[in-house]
Image (cartoon, rainbow, N blue to C red):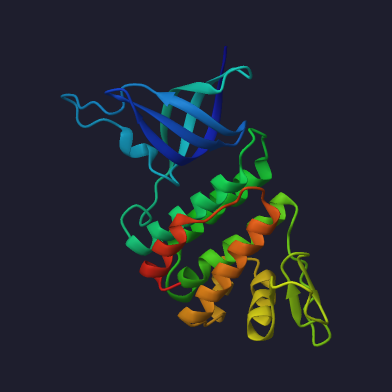
Length: 247
C-alpha cells in the first residue's frame, strides 16, 4: 500500500476504542475518505494527545496510506497546515463552520477527487476565520449559494425587472411565479442576485441584511439543496446557527 502526501479538511470525528479516532476527511488527492488514527487520545509525559487536531473544519497536512479497495484508510503522519486564529474559540465562527461542514457532508458522499472544490472549501474556511461584522453574518448565505455550482445546480444570475422571480426548483430567474411553492420573489430574489455577484467575501460587507431576511433566505437555500441533492434531509446545525448568529 502506497504512502501519499495530501492536504485534508476534517469533517467528522468519532471515538474508536480507548485511544483512537475514526475521522472523515475531505482530501485534496482522494476526495472524501475515512481514516483510523491510532493512539491520539492518550496523554504522555510530553503532553496531551493530538486528538485536538481533528476538530471539524481543521486543515491538515497528511501522510496517508491509500488502498482503493478499502473503505477505511490509515494516517501515518499529520500536522496543522493552517492554524486558525478564531474558528475553534469564537462561538459564532464555530457555528458557521459546523454549518458549512454539515452542508458539505450531505453533498459529498462518493470518494471522487476534485482539487478545485477542495481549494474552494479551504479558501472559504480561511476567509471565515478572518471575517467580521456583516461579512460574518452573511457568510452562510454566500457559501451555500456558491458551493452549489460544484455539484451542477448553480443558480444562474439572470435577475432583472423582467425576471424578478427565482424558481428554486429550476435554479433560474423568470418573469412569473412557477406552479409550485419553491420560489423567491421581491427583496429575497434581489438579494440572492446580489449574493451571486459576490466574488470575494469582503464584498459581503456591502449587504446589510436583518436577521429575518437572513433566516428566510437560509431556509430557502436549504430547500434549494433538498430539491437537488437526494436524501438531503434536515440540517441540525441550522437551528444552532439561527440561535447563535441570529441567522
